[in-house]
Length: 634
Ligand code: ADP
Ligand code: MG
Image (tube, rainbow, N blue to C red):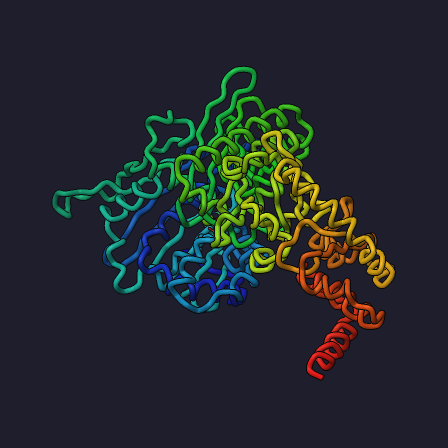
C-alpha cells in the first residue's frame, strides 16, 4: 500500500452510531444484503460518472468501460468490491461515509423502541446503504479517488464501525472506489466464489453494468494463472429496456429495492413502453410502506430520470403530481436532450403530457390493485391514503378517479377501519337516497357517538365518518361522486329529501309551529352566541345539537387555521332542539326565567361539548350545572 499522508481520526455523527448499532443487531438474519447495497452504490457511481462525462468527457480518463469487480481472499478473510465509477474526494468521503444526510433521521431514530423485532422492521423504512457492510465486517477499508482529480488525491477511509473512522490521503492511479471488507469471524462463508455468485444473481442481476467475479479454477493450485480471469455473472442490461414477458417478479422486486433504497418488496408495479409522438419507457412502483420522511418537505421524491439509457438525475419530481409522491421508479426518455436540467424540465411542454400519462398509469395501477388484491390495497391505504387525499384538490381532471380510490370509515363498519369505498357506499344506498352523507370530526370514537347520526341510525342510512386532519379540506374539493352530491350531516338545515315521507315532513312543520314560543325564548337567552335557534329533525335521543352554517368553516378547519396562527372568521352555530326530549319539554314548561336561562345555557354548552368543541366559559357551565344539582337534591 502506498504512503498515507494527512491522516485524521474523526467521529461518526451520533445518528450513524445509532444506525450502525441497530443495523448490526437487527439484520443478522438477512446479512447477505450488504452485497446488494454496495453493488447498488457502485452502480450509482457509474451512473453519476456517465452523466458528468456528458459535459466533461475527460473524466472517463480513457476508460469508458464501466464495471464492478467482486473478489475474495479466503485466507485473509476479505471480500473486495471495486468500481471505476465517479469515486469520492476527501470531503465527500467524510460527509458521505461519516454522516447521514437525510433530514429527519434524528427524529426517526429517537422514536425507535429498542424492541429489536419491531425496530428491525422499521429500519427497512430507512434504507440501510453503505453501513450495512458492518453486518458482516469488523473492519471496512475504502480506497477511492474522484474522477478528474490527480492520482495523489486518492483517499483511504477505514473504520471498525465503532464510533470512529480514519481518513488519509493516498496515491490511487485508477479512478473509482475499492471497498475491502474484513469479515467477522463466523462470516467466512462470504469469502467464497459460489456464495458471492449466488448472492449477486439473487439481488443484483438487474444491475445494468457488468459485475465480474474471478473465474473458478478447478485444476491444481499451481495451474492457476497469476492474474485472475474475470467473468461477468449478471445479466448486465438495464432492466426496463427488456420485454415485460421476460422479466420475473423477483427481478422487478430487486430492481425496486435498488432504485427506491427500500428494504421490502413493492406492492405493485407498471412497466410500459410508449411509442409514437413521444417515446419513453416507464417503470413505476407502489411501495408497501411509507418512508419515515414522507411528510418532510425536503424529503427526496420523484423518479430516476434517464435519457436514452444515460442516467440524468435522481428525484425528478416533475413527472408526477405531489399527491403521488410515494411512487418510485424510472423513466427513460428518447425525446429529452442529454443536457436537460431541472429548469428545462419545469418549462418543457413535453413533460406536461408525460406527466398526465404517468399520473393516469399510477391511478390505473392503484385501481387494479384495489380490485385484484384488496389486502394489499389495505396496506397501501394505511401507508399512503392520507397523501392520496390531497389528490382532489391538486388534480381537478382526475378527481372522480381519485375519489374512487378513497376509503373511509362508516357507520356500517363498527371497527372504524377506513375500508369503505364510495362505490360500496353507493351500492348500499337506500331507496329514495340521492346524496352521500358524511360527518367529520376529531376521532372515530367522537364521531361514532355524535348526536348528528341519530336520525340516520333510525332510518338505517349509512354515513361516512371522516376523522383524518385533512378530511374537511378534502371535502371542500370533493363535491360529488357518481353524479351524487356529498352532504355534511352537521351542516345547514338537514334535508333528507325523499328519505323523509310526506307525513314526516308534515309532522315536522306542525311541531315547529307548536314550539315557536320556546324557540323565541331561547333566542332571547342565548342571544349573540347563536346564529339561529330551531326545531331539529336530526335527533331522536339527544335534547339538543349544534349545526354548522351552510357557508361556515367546520371545527377541524378552524382548529387547523388557528394552530397555524391565521385569523379565523367568526362563525356562530345553529342551535337545534329536540322537541320530543323530556328535558326540552321541561324547559318549555319552565316559568321561572332564571332557571330557564340556566338550563338553556347548560343545554347549549353540552351540545358544544358533544360536537367536540371547547367551552368559551367552562367555569360558568360548571356553576350552573352544580346549582341545578343542588336544587334537585334539595
Ligand atoms: P445512498 O445510496 O442511499 O445514498 P449509502 O449509504 O448507500 O446511501 O451511500 C452513501 C453515499 O456514499 C452515496 O450517496 C454516495 O455519495 C457515496 N458512495 C457510496 N459508495 C460509493 C461508491 N462506490 N462510489 C462513489 N460514492 C459512493
Ligand atoms: Mg446506497
